[in-house]
Length: 258
Image 1 (tube, rainbow, N blue to C red):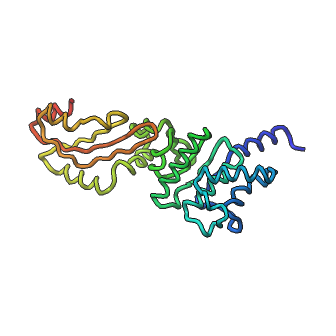
Image 2: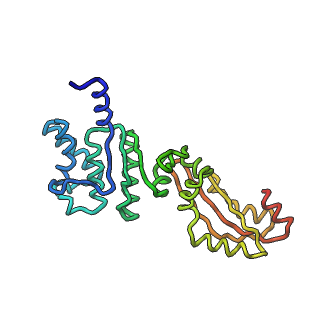
C-alpha cells in the first residue's frame, strides 16, 4: 500500500516534465503517437488523447506533421515534439536539460522563442540547464550559477550581468560581451601612449542614451570606439563599450568624471 508521502512524491513528480538534449523520441512512433505516449501511461481516454495531442501540435507549430516519424524531421522539429510531449500532462514545471545544445543557432533561437511563448501562455515555470549564456539572456528572468555541484551566485539576470561576484560568472558573462578578437584590439590600444582606454557598462534604459556624442560635445575630447556589444535580456538590455580617450590630461579627467 502506498504511503501518504509516497503519493505526494508521485504527484510532485507528475507535475514536473523534462525536455532532453537529444530529444529521446520513440523512433517507431509518429509525432502524434510520441506526444500521446504520456497520456496513454496516465490512462487518458482515446478521445481526450486525440483532443490534447491536436492542441499541442498546434501549440508547438507542427501542423501537418502529425503522421511523420522522427527520422523524417529536422532537429528543431524533433525538439518541438519533445516539448509537446513534455506538456501533455499539464506540468507545473518544465525542466530543460541542455535543450538547445544539439541545434544550430537559428533553430536554437526559434526554440527559445517557443519556450518563452509557452511560459507566457501557460504560466508554467521553465528551468533551463545550460552553459550557453545567450540562452540565459534571451528568455530567463533569473539565473543561478553552479560550480562543483553548489549554487555560488543567483539573482535577476540583469543584476548578475551587471555585477557578477564570482569568477566563474564573470567568465560566463564575457562570452557575450567580450570576445577574444575584440580583447586583442583593446590590448593593442593599451600599448598606445596617446590614448586612455575605458570600459563602460550600460544597463536597462542607459543602453539607449547617446553617451559618446554627449561626451564629445560637453568635454571636447576625441573618442575612439574600440569594441561594443549589447545583449538584450527578457527584462532589459545589458551592454559594454570600450573606448579610447585622446586629449589633454585635464580633458581626460573631466571625461572620466562625467
